[in-house]
Length: 439
Image (cartoon, rainbow, N blue to C red; front, side, top):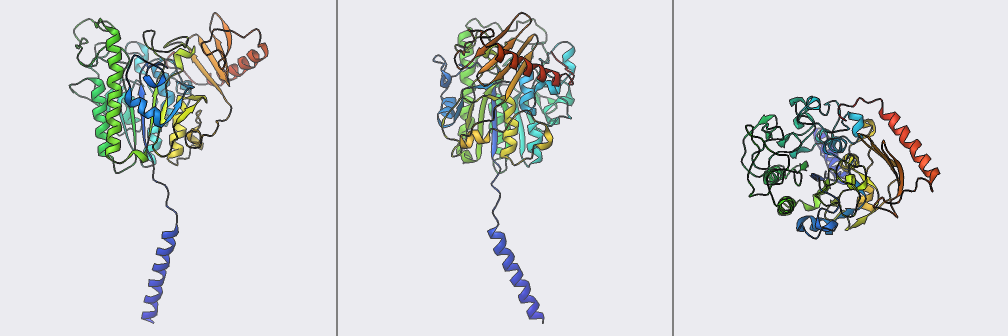
């Protein structure tokens, strides 16, 4: 009897091993690296048509990845785009339609911790999470990235800092490790790269989400060898004292590209390239001195130059090289990343949509209307049609024929104009239930 029981036990163990070996294993969670430039316009890098700035590493990503030619930031300035990007929602839903300024009433506000961010959702799914660079979603400790799902934060919380002294535009020192202000010598772009590379090396054996929001090429104009000029005890200008701004701006973009190359090389050396999705975007269009190509408008404007920006998605062996002219927004990345990580998003009430079918199988996105609002400007996009409204004017453009927004069709296409105005009004009515902290 004892031998019979032992035999049955061994038999059950063997069958268990057989069945467990036949059970398909879940695919490994992909690593995700999200890189965002600051104030980089649509034609700000070589692979998007710039012939005066050298960006070989971004060009390499573009050559092997998917170039999104109709990608848009949710806002035409810093804070709202970052709020939408990290929450997958219109920035109006989280009260951050405008900029959180270093001075004044808005300084007390930030991204509420009750809102689930992509970092928080991915952390719950088993990811190690880090942010290296610019935050700009709240100065107060309660709004710090570590309270929004990021395990590790190196960077600054304001809109821009001196690339060398690390003082912000109010003369306040702004360089952090998590909640602690720290002294760390170095050029901001290089420090961001250093910490990004260290994060990847530390977490190479586990799934990670790394957010790399660069300061470049946001002002002040400073290259690696330009002097520091912002300190707590002196007066200074917003743009800085550098006379050759063209040279400094070019260097700021090229050093960022160099850092992205270092990060890519680290991924390759650790044999993580086939396991890692890399996305590169910008937070809004360039200022007038930047490079928006032929687009009309610049940072702060709801003309195309204010929010149509470069975007690249690269994943070796997963994403086929090519170009897509489908309309994509910043808030689409959160549902995309969560879908790739197998996270259920039904209860998150996201406004963005999952782009994984577009990236991996070249599937078409469903038709939708997209809205923008900033100060006295309002816009709605539906297919090729774009409605643009301000206190002074209402106009309608067909972007498939008029990307530079020169030919107003509001009279000839009055029915389309009325339809889009009604859709915009419905969107604005929906947003009225959310209190705006910034404007």
